[in-house]
Image (tube, rainbow, N blue to C red; front, side):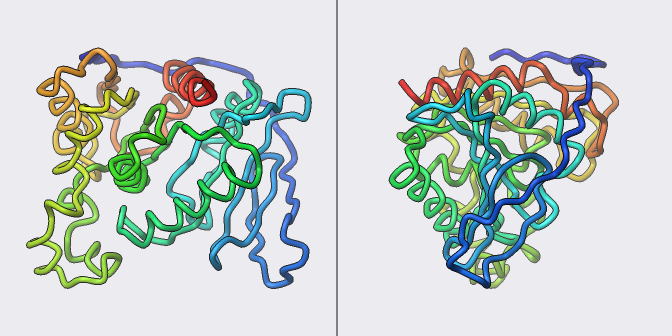
Amino acid sequence: MKYIVTAMLCVVGTHVALKPYQCDAAEDLPDAPVKNLILPGETFLLEESAAFVLWPPEELRREPQPWIMYAPTLPGYPDEHEKWMHEQFLAAGVAVAGIDAGEAYGSPRGQQWMSALYHELTERRGFAKKICLLGRSRGGLWVSSWAIAHPDKVAGIAGIYPVFDLRSYPGLDRAASAFELSAQELDAQLSRHNPIQKAEVLAQNRIPVYIIHGDDDKVVPLEANSAALANIYTRGKAADVFKLEVVAGQGHNFWEGFFKCKGLIEFGNESARDGCK
């Protein structure tokens, strides 16, 4: 397992300010939600939820289109802190897409929305059948749960201080309603619903992972989440496809190094392109 502790992991680049652009692809659906995008793309209504695609420049698009599925796609995400990172994906010809599943926390219903987006893009729009997943914070619950259920469709998983254990965040009391269970019922069924307790599937399928996480994260503790997943990969003899960048002294914050991590960006681009093979 590649496990690196560093005090500074950002790549310094020029921030290119692009005017936000909105193109509503669902013109025949007047009630389609308007989602403000940080980069050129389109939004559309899918299963009554706001979905989006950030598009690479026309000359860099291809078929099948390599892409990253991003989470959590709540109304404010992706946000301005991530803009430079997503620009790098688009500049490499990789699209970024997501769907607003609300506070789904990796629940079966949330996974259904992600699957709806996957099928829309792969079956109707010529996107690659294998994808890179990118989870920021609680988005880690989304992407890891979906990957565990669909390992054959995943080329890689990237994470920015991601959550993998429901018990650490948001806690069972808060998460239970997303699973349509009481906290007690969710606790009794954790082995079915908690990604970290099922993550052996990821190691067994040797799904590559790249994570950046601060060692002073009080919201999403490193040891219970990213480090725990790293240990699962080590036990599963898949440490060679797992890289965890631990940032000394950083917590759950907007430090730009989380969003200008050269290794994570390169991993996302390479994984998305690998999905086209």
